[in-house]
Image 1 (cartoon, rainbow, N blue to C red):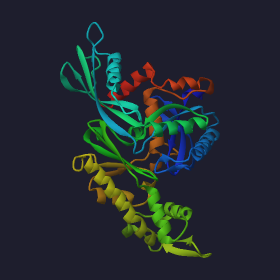
Image 2 (image 1 turned 90 degrees about the vertical axis):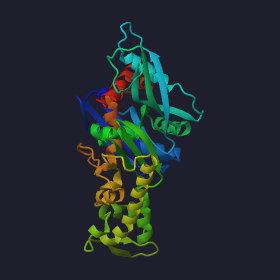
Image 3 (image 1 turned 30 degrees about the vertical axis):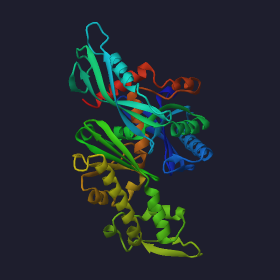
Image 4 (image 1 turned 180 degrees about the vertical axis):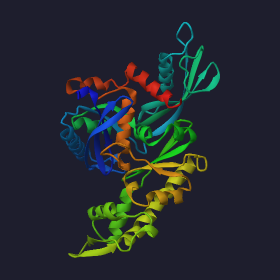
Length: 409
C-alpha cells in the first residue's frame, strides 16, 4: 500500500484518544489500523493540559503506526464542543459562463461569498454548509449544477468555533509531530457513518454520548439544523458507581464495562462481582442488580436532558426518524431500551460495520475517515506534509461541493 493511499483520523476525546487508519476502496473504505490511548489532559471534551494531551496523541499515533507498519505524517482532526456555533448566511453571485449554465465554479464562488460575514475576533470559520440554492428567484433547489440562470444565491450557515479552542487543538496535534490535514466537525463526520440519507431528509437527532459531554445534533431536509452540548456523559455514570460502591474511579470504570446494565428490571441478582472498597483492605461483593440501580437513574437523566435540548431546537415532536445514538456508554446492555422509554421516539444505536471498530465509540473516528474519503483528500508522506496546510484548495472545494450536493439527491 502506497503512503498516499491512506487516510488517518484523530478523535480527541475526554476518556480516549483514537487514531484510525483507513484505506479507500472505490466508493467504500477499509479500516486497517487503530491506535488508542487514555485521554489525559481533557475535561468535558476541552483541552485543559497541553502537555498531557500531546503525550496521549503521540501514544495513540504510535500504536496505530506499529499496527500497520507505516509512518503517519498528517491526520484529519475531529472537533466539537460547546464553543461550536451555527450562523445563518447568504451569498449571491452572477453566473459567469457565457451560456449561463451554472457550474461547480459558480457554486464555489457563491459559497465563498457566504463566508464573507463580520465575525467577532475570537470566532473562526470551520466550514460553510448550503441549506438551499436560489436560481433567479426560484427557491428550494438542492443541486443547481447544469441549470440555466443569471443570478445564483445560496442560503447557508457558517459553522464557527472559538479561535482559542481551535488553535489549542491544532497546537497539540502539531506538537505531537503531525500536520493537520483538515479540521472536521465531528457531528458532520459521524453522520456519514451513522445516518442514512432518508434519516437526514426526514428529520433525525444524532446523539453522541461521550465520556465528558453529550453532543446533540439535529438533521432535517438533508442538512444539519442545529447542535448543542450537554456537559454530562459516561464519566458521570462511572462517578456515580464509584460513590455508590465506595470504590476507586478506575475500579468503577472496569465494573461499568464488565457488569453494568442500564435497566434494573433486566439486571440479574445472580451475577456477582467484587470491588476493592476504599478505606478497607477487603473486597466487597455486589450483584448486577445493585449496579443497575446506580446506573439507570443517571442514564435516565442524560436521555431526559437530550430530549430537552431537542425541544429547545423546536423538534420535540417532529423527528420522524427518531434518535440515532453512539458513544461508548451505549454498549451497556439495556441502553437502547431505556433511551426509547425516555425519549419517546424510535431509537437506534449506530455501530460502524468495519472489522475491528464495531463499537458505538468508534463512530466519530470512522466517520471522519468516510468524510475525508468523500472529499477526495488523502494523508501524505512526510516530505509532502506541508502541502496539506492548503486545506481549502480549489480542487478540494469542488469535491466538497459535490459531496454536499450528493447528500440531497
